[in-house]
Amino acid sequence: MARKPSPNRFFWGAGTSAHQVEGGNDRNDWWDWEQLPGKIRDGDRSGAACLHWDRYEEDLDLLRSLGLDAYRFSIEWSRIEPEPGRYDEGAIEHYRRVLIACRTRGIAPMVTLHHFTNPRWFSALGGWEVARNLPHFARFARLAGERYGDLVDVWVTINEPEVLAFHAYDEGAWPPGVKDRARALGVIANLLEAHALASVALRETDRVDADGDGKPALIGVAKHWVLLEPLHPWWPFEHVSAAIQHGVFNVAVARALRGEPIHLAIPGIRPVRRQVDALRGSSDFIGVNYYTRWMVSLFGKEPRQARPGAPVSDLGWEAYPEGLERALMECAAFGLPLIVTENGIADASDRIRPGFIRESLAAVDRARARGADVRGYFHWSLFDNFEWNDGYHGRFGLFAIDFAKADRPRSPRQSARVYADEVARRR
Ligand code: IFM
Image 1 (spheres, rainbow, N blue to C red):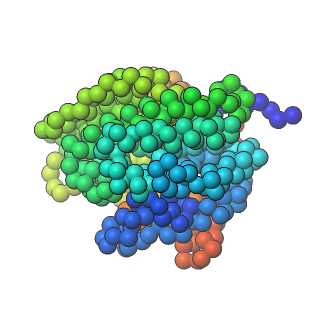
Image 2 (image 1 turned 90 degrees about the vertical axis):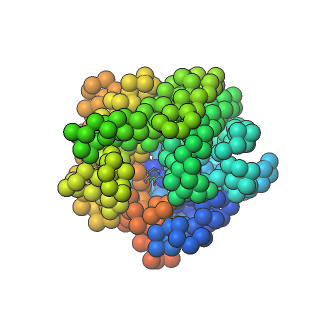
């Protein structure tokens, strides 16, 4: 008889997202963005990506070969609902097959409903800027709960709302390419409200405890938790600037997730205040996506930069795995259980990643020993994939993919073994 998972289980997993790995996701705003000149490094396009749409079974076997028992992935809204209210049964069934493939391998799925991409029609309606669009997302969440609730117990409603809002509406680097900080704050608020509505929909529809641990639906947001420090510690203005950025990017979002009113404030910009009753009780955990720390600088042309002289990833982000302990402790202060929903490094040569993994997991151990209620760790990413503006330059995979070959062969990096061994030691 299959062993019943303990209610206090710890998830050991790895993650991906639909647009980054599936291939052929041509019904969303990112696909259109990639066709525009100058948007993606070297003109890369997601294209066939990793062919994960067809090769998911093999990929789940890879995950299992590392001794992992959880897989975080996203279901692509634009495939499931290509036009408002019209559902593609083939796409819905496809994700059911993926979920069944997880369950038959003893893998707990963690399903993300929104990982940066919007159906083209949703963007045309004004996307996340328009409050009356939020029920569309709640309807999608309801459908997910109805169609997948018997197989899914852990849901991430939205991935990195604050990253999406700032990249897409402040820096203008992501679709729809807006450069207006005030609008970005409004989008964060709408995304938080959308999470709350989706959470209500999931709780109403997912009543089946798929793995028998007594909990039919654990719901959270995957929040990008960034460490911010002044580059010049002797300069008070940089302390103030780092504190303001931490306040809006980290603290305000975490407070809203635990049910407090939304309050987003940046000096010189009209603050956003909103009471969303449905936020109360909306989150069973906060997902922590931790990658690096940034030094805040008020001189020079880069407002945030890696610590001078520090080891950096292929994308120029400081390799600072020990910072995960601080990120978890800061986040634990908001009183919700935590799951590390992403942690990893772009390192094609795999020089840094083995040590990064060891130190990151040691940081998780220390945070837990200090009382942080951490319930799982998902490495980002299971394999190399389409890294948004950086195209195929950011290689985050435990498994490398050769994108020059049509069949996208996968091969394990040394890191894959290191992660497997570290997990085995902790079981
Ligand atoms: O690849 C992304 C992912 O989609 C969201 N979090 C950060 C990762 C690395 O940039």
